[in-house]
Amino acid sequence: MKRLLGVMAVGIGLCVVGASGLVGCSFFRSIAGFARPSLAFKSATIADASLSGATINLTYVVNNPNPVSLPLEEVSYRLSVEGKSVISGRPSKGLRIPARGKGELVFPAQIKFSEIAPALDVFLSKDRARYRAEGSIGVESPIGMVRLPLAHEGEFEVPKVPDVQFGTPHVGQVSLGGASIEIPLQISNRNSFPLPIAALTGALKIAGNDVGTLETTGLGILSPRATREISLPLTIQFRGAAAAAAAIQRGSGELAFSGSLRSGQAAMPIDWKAVRQFLR
Image (cartoon, rainbow, N blue to C red; front, side, top):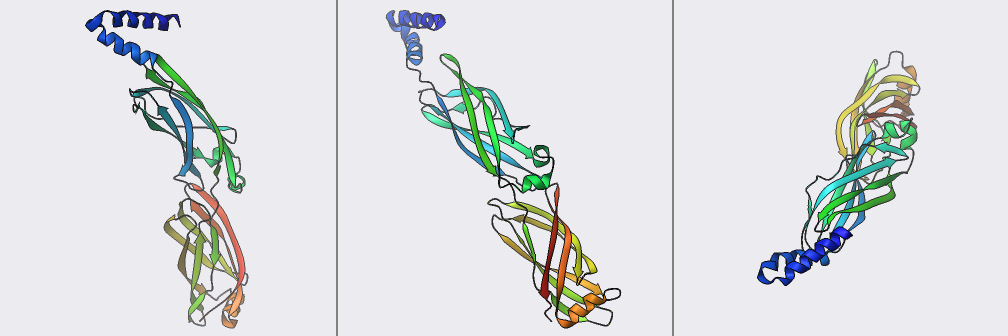
């Protein structure tokens, strides 16, 4: 306070000395009229989400009511998810908040779900997860460094494992030794954000008999709430699969799939079972 009063006294003195005091008057007015900027939370968005992790971008808005721009000089930031600290990025120093304007600061954090919960399937069964952000930023101003605290708590949507359903198989050629069939598959993204699907692979049973392995790769990105339909070919050998052969011949039987779906670095188990008709 003594330092500020001293600076103001100097400014007043400079204003009194006429033309030579113009610079001093301008400086004094910038101090006397300086208004403290404010910092407010704006949004939390999810990017690059998969079943293994996601990036959460927390956006804050700095309001600068002053006639001069203010450079961002200091950033201290911490983010925790479900009580566990995560690695967070921060805005670059040197960013300037425009005069009589607003500037957005984005704090990205990459979250690995396996580091948040000991069991990934337990974490992915949650609907939402809690986070807490805290810290401060510092902007340089005519009165020195102005530090603005930030603190915010909220929740984000935990990625859900896609829903996998098998449709009605279409039987192609049938011989004494086996048959070729096409098995429709639907993969539905239950999330409000895009989700990458790397592969789906597993063993298929018909009427309790192992009949082969189904595998699809390169499914790409599933749009929010979207369903992807594909058809998987399979050649079945009847040797050792009499029950499967009988089910195909009579036109119905139980299909059972046991495998995994990969998204990001995570592979989640998929187990599906239902009675289906076999169309010729």
